[in-house]
Length: 336
Image (tube, rainbow, N blue to C red):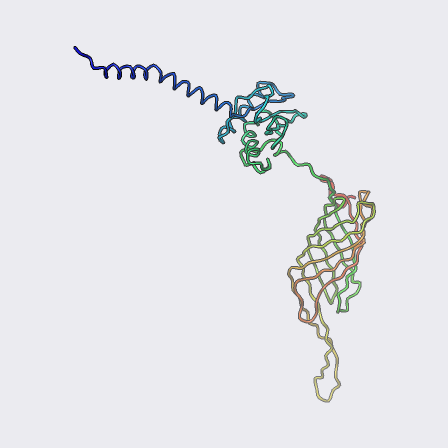
């Protein structure tokens, strides 16, 4: 039987493909793998002071996983410093019961491109912290902007420490005047509560004054600013109030019952009243600020947002006020 030479040639090429193609494919895959590894960044665990190596490596693997989710090529975390190339450095430092996690990108090693850090209460919180650190580093945004309801750390949720102040009961007397009316130095009273810091105070007051011709009562909430933190300090302030007032005008009338009789005279009383919102401004001097008590001299002007038909009511008061610490649990606010 005669064999066609073309058959031998075709058989030879098929054998070549069968034998060589697997090696070519493996070489191509190896080349691709080497190329991928050459372009990948190293994740270096620099320091883990106070943290076990196993915990530090597990935390670093969480960081590496987050990078990979975003499409970054990251090698397996190592404890030895890379020689060159793009490096992500992570270290852990303990301060008392807290752990500082610091993540930075450096290229070359020692030249920081961007860095972020976050305090955590324990190493287990790296489960919540890892996505936030990587997000903040990759997008170069504040670490605080990455928090949500499921990733807040114990340090961020801890109780805030604030400047302390003092709660005070206030009581005082004042003299009231109504511009445009025959009311001068009419006695009044005030009772309230305030919370004071060295520079500011907020508080609420009930106050009132009146006689046969006029009356006003108000409930106000506002604040004050002290110009220094010394034992004696001037202050200014203001606020809003619910204000109610009335005023009685007296008109002299004359009348006679019979035409041949003389006139007799009498006073006709006309009372007007209203209530509504108002505002006030205040200024004064606070004394004995270094003790448990306070003594204040104060000038105050109340301006209701309404007026009566025949007489406006805008009380101007000058008074003296005493304040004493409020102590929770003490029986009664009068036991100074």
